[in-house]
Each structure stands twice: as C-alpha cells, then as structure tokens.
Length: 149
Image (cartoon, rainbow, N blue to C red; front, side, top):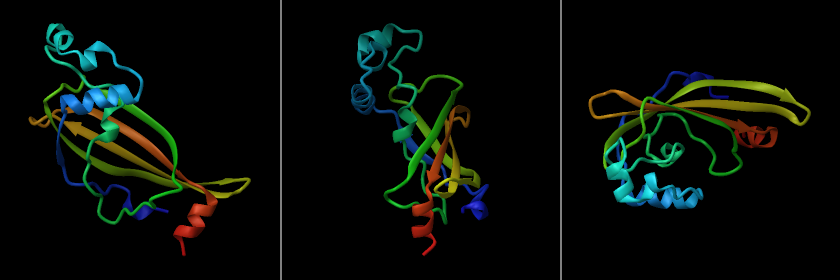
C-alpha cells in the first residue's frame, strides 16, 4: 500500500520533555512512579532529574512525512518496540523524526491485510540518538478497500 514511501522521512521536529506532560502521562498509564513525578526523587536519582516513562515518545511530535496520509479512524495498532540509549530527561529538548521503514501485505481469512512499519527517532541537541521506536500499523481488508476508492 505504501511501498513508494519506504525510506521517506519527516523533517526533525523539536520537542521539550515537559514536567507537567510527563506527570500527566504517568498518571494516564497508571504508573505514577516517583522517578516520573516527584522532583525530590528525580534530583536525588542518578539522572539528577525526573525521567519520562518508556512509552512517552508516543506523544511526541515527529513532523509530517510528505505523501503519507493515514485515515483518521479504523487503524489497528499492531506492535510497538522501543530501544533506549538512555532515559528521556525532564526539561531536555529532543529532536524527533519518523521514517517509513516498510510496507507489505498478507492474506487472511477476511481478505488482504496491509502493514505499515514506521521507525521513529529521538536525538538530543548534539545529534546523539536517545531512543528509537518501531510501530506497525495494520489495515484490515475493509479499510484497504475504502482507502483505494
């Protein structure tokens, strides 16, 4: 479905890991661990500040990949993997971008399924990779048919 977009990237987008956003995210996922929300615990930690939960990059802005237009509804979240070189630190700036890594189809009992694999990157302001994330989006047969109209 999206084979022609493989290798296309968004431009880097600057994000700040804001204390309030980290706290709200930790509460929303039901993990208000003190390293995420308690400033004293963060200051006394080996990081000297609070850190963000592992899945926090899900809410960061990665910019737009030109030509990639996904439907607003009907997408199936297939899989998401995170790899960290180090934690995201509260108040740091991270440059984020995303790339279409793969696109493929598979047959199922209900018809052809489409798969889109996006790889996301977060770099510090010196250009060092802090994290990568890979997510797979699944398009069921009905959605594929609707998108091809």
